[in-house]
Image (cartoon, rainbow, N blue to C red):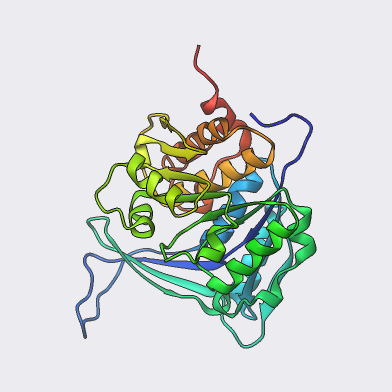
Length: 307
C-alpha cells in the first residue's frame, strides 16, 4: 500500500484538545453531586487525532493549530512532537486555555460531552502558514476550528494546486466558497444527512445530492459496514474487515488519517479507502482515541487482499 520510497506529505489544519474523562453510575441531574469512578486524561481533538493517524500511516505531517499557554498546551505539543509531527506552526495563544472536552461516561456506556474550544477558536487566518500548506501534497481539515480559517486554508491550498480533504465534523452548513475548493469530503451518515438535507436516504442518494451541491468526491463512512464513495459520477462501496469492537472512539479519525496518507502517496481512491477501512477496524479493537490509532505496517497487513 502506497508508493515505495516516497514519504507522503500532509498538512493538517485543525483542533487540539485535552479529553478529561470521568466515569459515573449515572448522569447527574441539576444540582446533584455524584461520586464518580476512574478519571483519565487523553490527548484529543479531531485535528490532532487525524494528524497522528496520518503520521503513523507513513505521512510526513505538519500541524497548524493553537494551544493555550498552560500545562495542557505543553502536554499536547509534546504528544504531537513525540509522533514526529512538525509543530512549528502550532501557535501558543497568550491568555487562552487549551481546548478541553469534559466527558462523563455512565455505567451503560453512554456519554455526555461538553467542549470548551479555548485556543482552537482563537485561531485566525493570520495563523496559517502558506509555505507549510504549499509544501504538502494534501491539506486535511475538520470543523472544530473557526469556519473562516477553514475557508482561508482551502483557498491557500488550491492556489498552490494542492488537494483539499475536509472531514466535515461536526456537521455544519458548508459555504459555496468552501465547497468549490474541496477535492474530497468525508462524512459519516449523520453528517452527510445534515449537510445534504437528505434525511433517511440511502448513501447513494445522499452522495448524488452532495455532488449536485458541487462536491467533487464524497466519502460516506458506514461504521462496521465500511464506506461508500462517489467520484466523477461513479459510485462504489468498500467493506470493512470484520473485527470484534471494543471502543469506537477514534475510529473515524483513524479512517480519515489513513485515507489521507494513502491518497498523498498517489494511491487510487479505492485503494485508499480499503486502507482506511482497515485502519478504522483496528482502532475499534482498542480503547481510547490516539492510543487506538494503528501504524502503517499493521494496517497494510489487514488491508492486503486475502488469497
